[in-house]
Image (cartoon, rainbow, N blue to C red; front, top):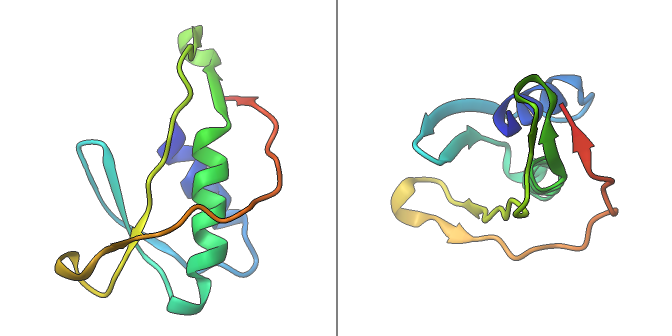
Length: 94
């Protein structure tokens, strides 16, 4: 559900051109322009961590979803992105 919300948020953004490349187990791999990484990272973290319920499954998340992000020009060069301050997101449902 969080992946769908991220995909929709990127599609709705007038400035982001990120492209979902792969989903591998519990990881998502996106291609993102270097200049868009800070904005994209904030969007992904905020979108995924604000998910609190999935209405279609009548599911309430009891444990917060924590997101860790990395960036690099190849998998071998990924470095963790530090959590940047972001606008407080209200918990949401899908």
